[in-house]
Amino acid sequence: MLSKLLAYVAAGQRVDVVPVDEMLTTQQAANLLEVSRPTLVKMLESGLIPYEQPGVHRRVSRAALDEFIASRAERRRAGLEALAKTLEPDVPDEFVTTR
Picture 1 (cartoon, rainbow, N blue to C red):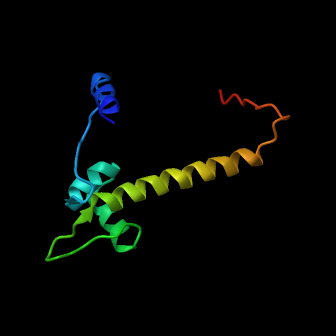
Picture 2 (cartoon, rainbow, N blue to C red; picture 1 turned 30 degrees about the horizontal axis):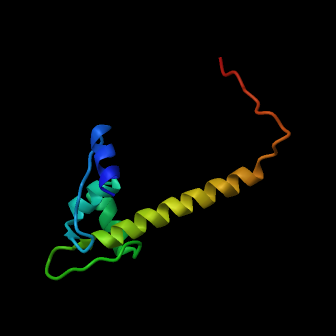
């Protein structure tokens, strides 16, 4: 794990090391998902990601975010596989000139 971390740092990539049970603000969670905060709030309220609201502010666990990211990647992979099955391998791609 440490070697992976160092490889990411050596490649110039951003690395965050946080405890899995850490609770994040909606802005922090939105930043990790690369969506706007209002979009994240809609996702929370629709039930896509579980959250807590101990007072006025919502808090999202890092573990819940990691689960959502993994499930989103799996849904994308399954969708791409389904799309690939609809393509006929014997039919060549056609290019259409527009100008």
